[in-house]
Image (tube, rainbow, N blue to C red; front, side, top):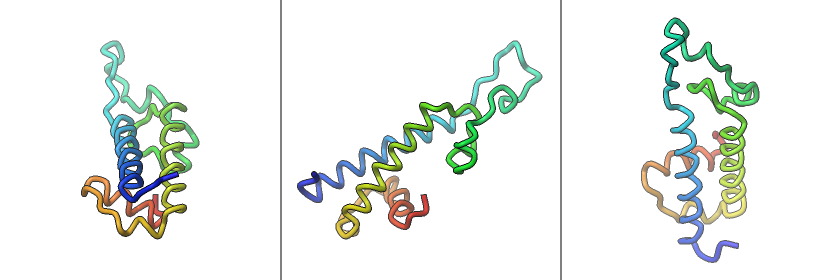
Length: 110
């Protein structure tokens, strides 16, 4: 149970930082093996069907189940905190890099 607004802010900041790190990792360019210079990176590995269907993957063609599961767990955790402490969220302040992302969760856009 979160005991204070500082605790809630710290937990949400940590979850948002982890989510951004996983998304950044998944958006990195795929190195193309030197032995296959004629192929585009998108031809090497197809995206996970669920990731495409849910819109979670847009730029990285090799998102595997581990990355997808990590993102789903982080999204779920953030949504649970927001839905539980919805009234308290507006009183917290977050750095700009987290504020926009948090706003998309608060408005259930993410």
